[in-house]
Image (cartoon, rainbow, N blue to C red; front, side, top):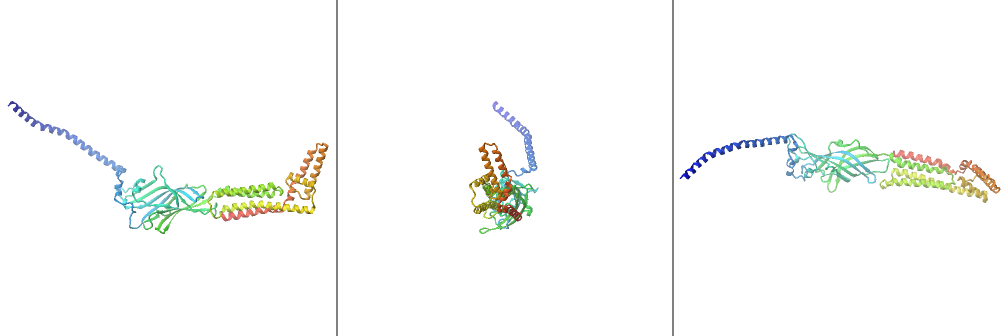
Length: 470
């Protein structure tokens, strides 16, 4: 009985006190919950404000949703089935790296920019600001398939990353820019080389889309082609850059729009004057020296002629090695081969002089009779001494002087006289004092005319040559 009454008493006390304890606990927890909720709301507002201040974080990693890339088929051109999409082009030429005459090509580095409108890429924007992307977006959207006609090799620069830029405006206008180096053909005409002017062009065209699907045009007309002011080449002067357009027809696919980057190159001729023209001119003048050498000095005149011929052959070979094997005659070939002809004719001239001299000797011997053996020996000795042939009366007098001097020398040696050297010196002086007159008298008439005729004809040739090609 007592235990039952105690249990009833404690139960009533628990029922009365527990609601108050739970209420106090809830009151204590309520500020903490309010504080936590207020902190979360403030953090959310602060993050929203930071995103508005930093526009780069408005759409982090969600450009696919912004540009609706997943909602469209970008394998098809903009406006498929309608009018052709216009694609504007402008070019900023950075440098012309090289020009090769042997391969008939050139290498150029430039910035190529495309402009077109693709409404599928339009996006809402309150500030009307464009968005810029790198090369990673190029593979997900449609871009023009421009290629370079007659190109041998081309590549997009990739240091430090691929040099590609894509800028999309809210209304769907797109700018696609890339930095590229192209090696392309240049059909050169060397008929006036090295006094020539070359016209080269780089041609741009769509590979897959003909004029019914894509229309290429220069964005700003002639101002679409810009060049660096410091572009220069070692062998050429760049006279002109120009932009033009046209059409290309292929029998299987139709008509295509084609754009042309034209530039005119004029060659610097001073290098070739120093390396080719001037040495050839010196060799021709050097071959004329043989006209002033005695006609009996066979080794001197022959060796001089052979040397000039070999030198001219070396100059021609060096020039041919640096040029393409064309089937027509170049301007430099005309000059070098005519110069070689003058050198060759100087050798032929001496061959004629030597032959006619031999004929004259035989005729003189037949008229005057045979000369004594002692006289012939002295003539040969005189010839060996001064290198000249003596066949006139003056030469005979000099030969007789040589003969008497030789007899006196023999007598002096037999008597043991010490004046042998003085007699030998006297004989040399007697021959040497008349050397100039002997050379002039022994000069052949062909040599006389060649000394005047060869220079006059060569000067006339130079006047005509430089008048035509310059």
